[in-house]
Image 1 (cartoon, helix red, strand yellow):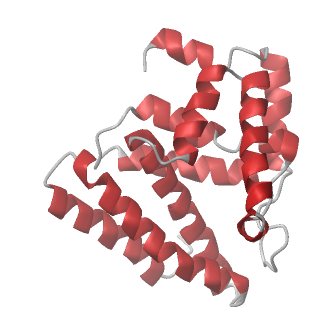
Image 2 (image 1 turned 180 degrees about the horizontal axis):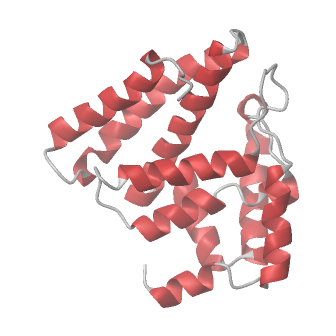
Image 3 (image 1 turned 60 degrees about the vertical axis):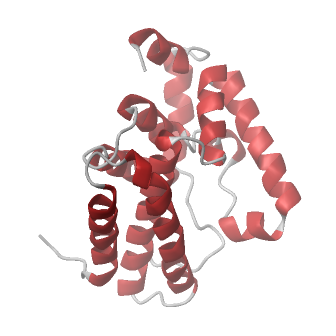
Amino acid sequence: MDRSTIEKLLEKEDLTHFAKSVDRLRFIIRYATAPRSSRESVAEHSFFVAAYVLKLAQYYQFDVTEALALALMHDYSEAYISDVPHPIKAQNPDLAASLEKAEEKVLKDHLSDEMAAILNRFNNADGPEALVCILADVMSVVSYAKYEMELGNSSYMKQVYEGTRPRFESLIASLAKYTLGDQAETSFYVLKQIEDIFESRIENN
């Protein structure tokens, strides 16, 4: 992604309005309908997704700038439509489809058509940038769910935690053709590293 494209990604809002929009994300809490011991805001989640994308650039070939922009902005629309928990969307596919359309409209109205197109690729798992960002998103879910479980939340968060395994295994398989090194070795290494997140205990450094 070249400089001129980057400048157009957020062209619809001036700095003041953009700052007000993204600031709302610190107040929107994920997993709103689930019992939880700690709170994770959409802003926190977006940070972790971006951090994991940056790390995954060591293993996969993709446009890092586009993937980072996607990681930071993939939930931007929630500043206007809030965060609807996954179980609600899963039980109401028509609602989920309507929300995707609403997300696209928010991005087109407030950011740019290009940012909306990038989000569309994310929603359809289209291309390495989208796949890496989805994997990073799942890694963020793994980390938060594991933290909740260690705090004693063994109800819904255990389901979330266990449900991520087939998702990241499938994503790693889809990303195999984009590895920087040997496909099998890199895929195995990334899989093992993510599994270590499951196995390791949270430490106070």
